[in-house]
Length: 465
Image 1 (tube, one colour):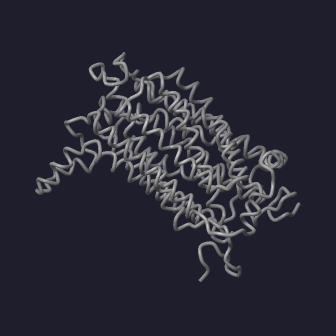
Image 2 (cartoon, helix red, strand yellow; image 1 turned 90 degrees about the horizontal axis):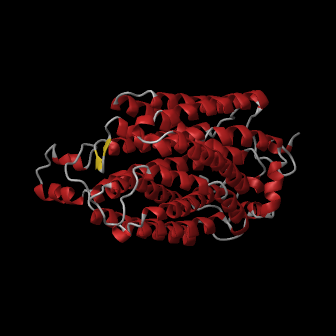
Image 3 (cartoon, helix red, strand yellow; image 1 turned 30 degrees about the horizontal axis):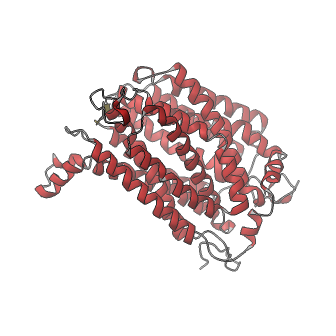
């Protein structure tokens, strides 16, 4: 049986990704992000309470829209940072970039634990966006360093790890934030249905305090450092091989120029990479307000927010499995359009949800399709360009998506604010994505088909004109 980094008739590949290390570290990275996504809306609600003057200087409370502001600045950082990450991965290797990014990410929870003044949140958000985009760009680039027959499965596993880590994040966050209730639950040993609310999504009467938030942030910093060390020291097999050499064969700037000369990449960049990700930004930025409008968040109390987060992340696992199966097939342009239209449709359903159960159902649909959008903007784009340009293509496509998200995030924040207007961004994002799908269909149509690994100097897969 061939190993995870071998083809069926090829010898072991030196310098290939060591998936037995890569996948757990990927899960840990997504775990950190998911726990922050769960805890920060509650943390900011806690700090926005006028009676909670615990931050530096004891000045005015946090503004109510601080979460939207954080996401806005975080997304802004993703305009350029994926390109830089791809260029650094091209020159120094994806493993090194991933390791250093995880170490740098540890600064985010450490600073948050000190409850900084509200004016410092944009700085934290920018650094969070830079390190997060570096982690995702370098991580997905490293996963491509396996033999071609196993690449689709590796990409699917990466997205499954995204779901697994993100599923565990809110659960562990709830245990940290409501640790007193959990300790009572463990000491009680009655295992009553009422006690199980700590593990589930039911509301808990006692809101978390500053100490619980700080312990959570310190824990995340330690986990991020350990993960960075693990991928840095054990994320790749030793030696120099064709895969490693191929990714470093071109100067990073020349790689970007070569990419922009490929008609196929330009079509994907202008239509898919730009427009497909906009609904994802709407969800990242406005879903907490949408949930609050339907009663799933009440101040700094979790009244159903955990249940929605768990639904989102468990759906990512299923989506990752589906992506792994789809990636083994030849994909045409019609499939790309279907993914984009499905994303837009799910966004519309979220906007028109008027009850909590409707929001749960629409979010499940949306998050399943989200995995396919992530795949389109990373592994799919990488498969459409020569091997030597793979890391640069991923970085550039993510940067194009970052530009779209930043433009939408800033514009949406200036038009819509708070729970009462949380449906508008989802409708606007859906409209833009449909425009992108129609543009892709008109320019490329169903002619775009994935095939064998492209070779440098050609536009079509396999080196045929």
